[in-house]
Structure formats: structure tokens, C-alpha cells
Image (cartoon, rainbow, N blue to C red):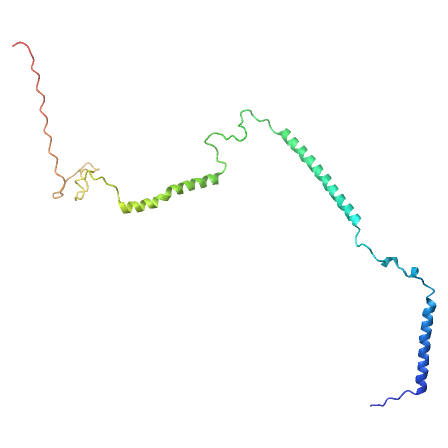
Length: 203
């Protein structure tokens, strides 16, 4: 380390005198410039305080003008639509006196105007009629076919001969012995003819 050399007293006193002189000169200069500018010269109009950020009057005027333009356009469009409607009504063909009045439908059968809806109604009606089929099948299996108590029974039921009579080829189907078919019904005796009436008269 190198030791610092202290400042001699004469040099420090000279520096203090020069510093005081510069300070006095600066204060004297400021006092001399005060008479050159007044408060009016120091005021800048570009950086003045603004009392309002927007122009309210201009905004209100623009809104009124916009509503006025919209109203005028609406009136023009309304007049144009009325004119076009009257023109279309004038170009419509003359209605025939035989035409049906409004709201009256032609007699049946009419053309279908809504085929999907008509098909859906038909399917619903069919499904409603088919609802009882399963229940009817269950009752048929439980109860069986209804049979009358005094119904005539077939005497050939349960025999070995499935059929009798003539075949489709014209040949007779004989009854085999032991089939146990019904006994033939006895032949009815013919009734005696009525006696001739006796004639009245001579010998």
C-alpha cells in the first residue's frame, strides 16, 4: 500500500475560495435572468389543462343524425315493399268461379299432402291391432279349442285307415280287415205304395 499524501493547508484554502466564488456567480446569474421572462411568457397553450376528454355536443349530434338516416331508410323500404305488393296483387290471375273457397277441402279420396305422417298413422293402427295376438296365443295354449259337449264325433277318428272312398286316380280305397271302422248303417226298407182308391159304379 502506498501512503496518501495529505493536501497542504495552502491548497485546501485556495480550493475553498474558488468554490465559494463559483457559487456566488451562479446565484448572481439566476437573479439577473429573472427580469427577462414573466409568467405570461412561460405559459404554453399546447400543454394547458383539459376540462373535458370528449366533445359531448359532437357525439349527440352524430347520434341524432344516425337515427335520422335510419328512419329515412326505413320509410323508403316500407314504401318500396307496399309498391311491390300492390304490383304483385295486380299481376295475380283471376280466380275461377268454380274454385273452392279458402279453407274448404275437396271430397274424399284426396291426394296425400303428408305421406310420412299418413304412413306413421297406418303403422300405429296396425301395431294397435296386433297388440292382442301374443295374449291370444297364450290363452289358446292354456284353454285349447272350444268344443261343444253334444258335438258329433267322427267314428273313424283313431283308426288305422286315414281315409276311405276313391283316390285321385279313380281307384277305390279298400278297408283293411281289423280297421275297426264304424258298422254300416242298415238299409232303409222302402215304404209300401199307397192302395189304389176304389171306384164307385156298376158291376
